[in-house]
Image (cartoon, rainbow, N blue to C red; front, top):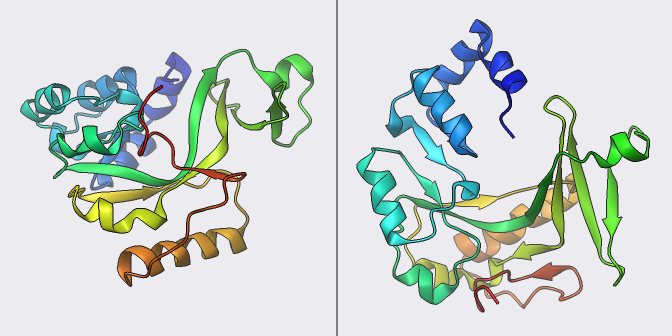
Length: 212
């Protein structure tokens, strides 16, 4: 959510100066994309497209590329077969992390009393969906109950030719962060063969099956 109060914050000279120093800035929506170009004056080559900008096809990829944007993030809804037909040379893929399932302006904390800590939503099957609040811009980000984990498929990802990978942490404790990064290193850097992750905690997302 990139509202007017968000834009007002980033219009401050100290924020503008900071953002201009980064090698690349990731835009999560068209509002923030336009802000980076029109108000910050960043060249398109320094602006990268997050997965919420939905580069879902080769046609979309080529359209953004013609505009000169630096990199994009592969849509989490594409499966392995579909990704083989995508030009992935300037694309990042998320190997680990909870997928956002909803951005809500109906604030859970505001409506039910802000407890001062993060909370979860629970569906009728008992699945728990973490809710991450952003009080500065007044919205909640609701994440999937399972975490995507694809470290055991390193050999398959070598064939897809992505330029980089994303490992996205939401609520992991420091020890778990270290363990996850070590697991990535074992698989993608050292070439070890890993077992499939626990089905009750992790999911392969759409990579092996696609959108149903």
